[in-house]
Image 1: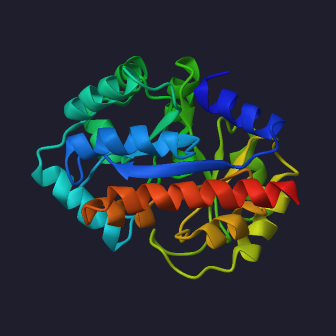
Image 2 (image 1 turned 180 degrees about the vertical axis):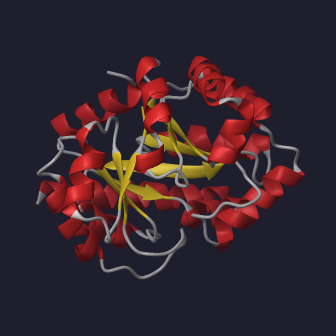
Length: 264
């Protein structure tokens, strides 16, 4: 088991839900990124989703787009992201998954990317702009290096496609709660809940619901159907506004609310 699988197994054994916290690497600056990871873990984060900034982040809403622009203006590159990872690994063993776009990785060389980022301490990658049908070579490379390549399911995923995408999924499956981009919004989580129930027929891999989660209440609603929730824009917005303490309070509140909900 790699770190992701180990952490999810521990949470399941403790009857707890996971909280995956997305932080854009280098926004507003590198020092804040590293401090935010440290404090997020202390406040109950189960996994860090480290955003690898790209100029055209097609799955991301306005907040994370803004963070990506700031990070790129700060000269953030894949080489510098490796340095940030190494710094984080000096104090933490929390699972870390990269979230980025194939253009960057393809330019770097995908196998080299996997080797270098795994060596620096990353456990897997989320690549939203490569569909399952086109990721065969990437999946092969990731499997060879014990590196998770997250699969996606959405409200529009058919059962036939679910059977295909979930079959060999490892680490976790990213369950997109609604049609659209990232960002805090009101979401009816029962929709993705129905999708999660179908997915359970095809896989035992943990399901993590993301998109739209911006409060403890939303986290509880999303987690009712899954093994973990993903919070991104709500944290990133606070970090961009210089409100690190507020970002951490949100994570803390989510942890408390999820733990309380699991007792009932």
